[in-house]
Amino acid sequence: MGNPINKMPCELCASRKHSMLSELSDTHICTISENKNLISHKKGQILYYEGTKPLGIFCINSGVVKVYKTASNGKEQIIHLAKSGDFLGYSALLGEENYSNSSMIIEDAKICFIPKESFLNTLFSNSSFFKRITKELSHEIGVMESKLTDANQKSIRERLAFILLQLGNTYGVEGGENQKIDLILSREEIAGMVGTATESVIRLLSEFKKDELIDLEGKKIIIKDKRGLARLSDFYA
Amino acid sequence: MGNPINKMPCELCASRKHSMLSELSDTHICTISENKNLISHKKGQILYYEGTKPLGIFCINSGVVKVYKTASNGKEQIIHLAKSGDFLGYSALLGEENYSNSSMIIEDAKICFIPKESFLNTLFSNSSFFKRITKELSHEIGVMESKLTDANQKSIRERLAFILLQLGNTYGVEGGENQKIDLILSREEIAGMVGTATESVIRLLSEFKKDELIDLEGKKIIIKDKRGLARLSDFYA
DNA sequence: TAAAATAACTGACAAAAATCACAAAAAAAC
DNA sequence: GTTTTTTTGTGATTTTTGTCAGTTATTTTA
Image (cartoon, rainbow over all chains, first blue to last red):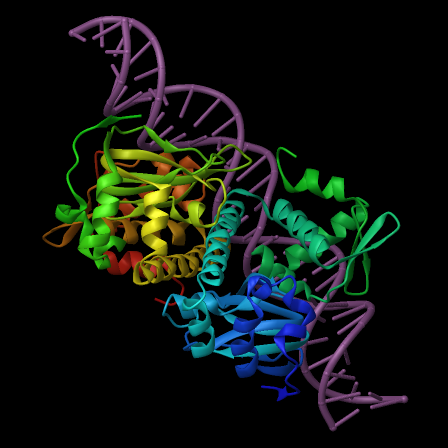
């Protein structure tokens, strides 16, 4: 999978600030810190497979991970992308179920593994942390409801425009009028996010380029007209 | 909205057995029981609207409720149907957000309203109940991931076949070889579950009937060939 | 119970999106 | 640095699904 690097304590971890660990007291964070294991992962490596038993949770220090399900037609449905500060696998752990999805590194990553016991002990002995996690789970459900509604009610063009905007918000680097999505995704992966065929993504991207909404720089996408994409992404925008 | 009927205690409620309250001790259930309010609702009534602030949770004693979002194209996306023993609105409460969806009675119902304070107090003072709720939230996320994957990767025909099977499992009444879905849904509502146009549902239902997979008895649907529907609902089934 | 309103259904057509086949470009492997 | 493999891109075609327009059936209301 990858190699352990060091034991940089959570207390000093930069990605903690914007993670769910931010509200955890120093006393509690030590329990987690002492038991975690930081591992370096290369692009393409699998973090865990759908259907297997979770043994702990993952906390992303750096890099990007795609979380996906393999559909019955063999295609990959990307549920979401996880980045620095995000946790992975806690819902399977708390639901006492096997993983409902798989996850793969798509940008070289450093990820801490926190064993089940340390995580659950901390959780159950610290009600504000427990509430924080519950809040996150609840929020996630609302997000999924929106995704489901969009998937069922919007066209591929609308969905692609929307996803480009989202990628811009999360991975965008501003440059003058433009915003460069600083993340390498294959056309097939974008198709897996939108839920369409790769060819459709390719065609629509070149249509967006022709309409001066975006620019293509190698594999990276530059957003030139946010407002235009927003208009395209939603009937009433 | 509806009229308070009585104060039948949760301890004696039949729907408690298969609800998340099943694991709650009698001491704790009394706090909830004393503060709840059982209200009778007629078909068509709204329980709560998307975007409004949750003031408590709903526990369904009898009847059926549709939980839905209104998409940007004006169509209604049904997220799920809730029945006896199901809770509604806890994820908005625990996420400290406004309702992410609306809900409407589709079969006359008796529903208890448990005020925010009683629910949260019970939850935070009873860790096994808290764990139970968390488990449910986590499970729900996995369900939503599957729905999203299906929505994006399956055809309308596959999705409709699948939903008929699910409705059969939940609302089915066995009768000889057949299973009657004992729930009145309009074609438009079925379309809202599948995520398609009403006309497409009508056409596919009559196709399924022609293929002897189902029968139509007024508004009710009778499943004649589960295996056939299962084969149709999934590429590898 | 008759009139009005709503829902179910049908056909014709248009639009959206998938599939197939293949060429060009880029990346990876040797 | 050349070969191989993978990814990207394009055109033609088919399939799927949505829309529109209209009829029939069923509920609801007065």
